[in-house]
Image 1 (cartoon, helix red, strand yellow):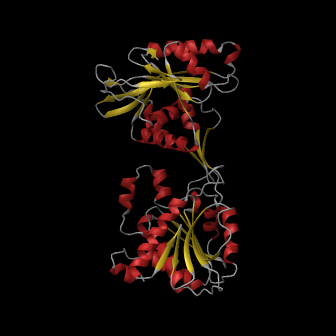
Image 2 (cartoon, one colour):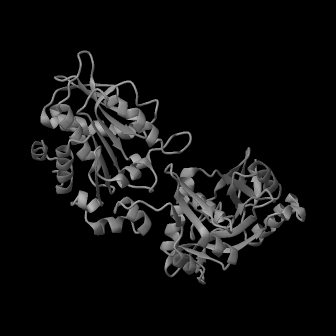
Length: 457
């Protein structure tokens, strides 16, 4: 089959994949667990395995039943991509089939290819001859964000009960060390399964190791995504040497617009922190510059009222020429009104799991590429050094400060989120009305004209 597909222009199976599949099929075991780096040929190879089982597998399907080759993925759209590859393979092999909703049915055999969402409720009620679980380490429940793999796999295996030659494939690039896929890899070869691991350039030799390093310069992400090394449960989120470099003096040649970033507090345990920051340039290029950092420690509410805190922040903003305040959603309704009364626009950014992960990766890149400079601030430096990234047993990424908290790091995370939305001006951009670049910021039912420093109806 591989030779026939190769003659039609499909890439040939790599030696590593051929050896792995020969070893698996020779073993007589039902489960294959593969950990392979991204772009390592997982999807294309496993689609061929699916067709192999459908056309040549020794499966006895009772009259009136249909044997299903099931693709399981977090999103139906992702699994649907596998069906497009299946169709291309069947067309190349001239195998007749019919299409239905998210299903390909063979005309000459009672076998169908179907896609299913990785949920307990979504993987029952069919007879499977092969189950291909795609990117198992990255499955996510849409409500909890946890990895449901253990429960989903427990529901899937009974679908194979009447088909003794049925196979189940657990395929994924790694994430953490505690998810169901990672634990299956750790179990190694057993009476039930065969395991195999390969970095991208071994599983797919058309890609070189150097190409993967060029594509992903962050060593932590590169090791996880391409070298197929799972990430430890807890790691420092930022490289300490890179953090230290960010606090070295770096005079700016030009400065873009400055904004005030705040991390609001209840005033009891956590601190209320703020920073003035924006984009600047020097001879080396653009960098995000933090000009001013300050805050009020926990329990400040006993001495300082909320009104006084806002007044202090307004003074800081106007001293630095900042007309826009950015913060998270905490106390957003109150702060929006309070800042508007004082001639400032407040915009809130909702922190979600996905945008927090993206923001931390952005900060990591800024530190690595020397694209950030921070005025000396002992507490922020200490928090950055103690800020940890953790992969939970459920497979979720979480972040937290160790010991010293993360109220000052939160300012940088919010800044990275705001910048990702394109809301921070670069040096040389003209935001004045004359320059045609004035930006209007939505504040409640009105807009805020930053050039004139006043609300516009």
